[in-house]
Amino acid sequence: MPTVHFTDAEGAVRDVQGSPGDSVMETAVRNGVPGIVAECGGSLSCATCHVFVREDCLSQLPPMEDMEDEMLYGTAVDREDNSRLSCQLRLTDEIELFVTTPETQV
View 1 (cartoon, rainbow, N blue to C red):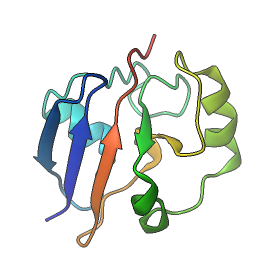
View 2: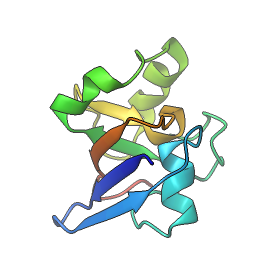
View 3: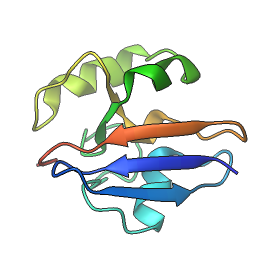
View 4: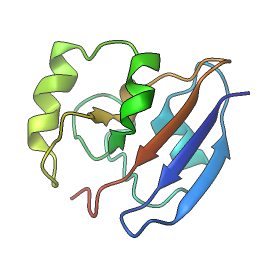
């Protein structure tokens, strides 16, 4: 079962088991993980599910598509090289991700 390790801006870690096929955002919302607002519900129109993916986990993810790249310019906290929108990150059986939520999403 896929695992996502969410670290908040203060450093608190919460480990969550997800379901293959679900997004990191859906997994966070379903489990009450703070720091993921997800105003648009995953329709790629708000950037309130911004996360920073740990560098060694980036290779487990598909490349960012153009629309996600554009949306990341509208985040409340400046994007970084490891920024992704968690609604665009799908879990697979073998994945184990470490992500950090920014200080704010809005």
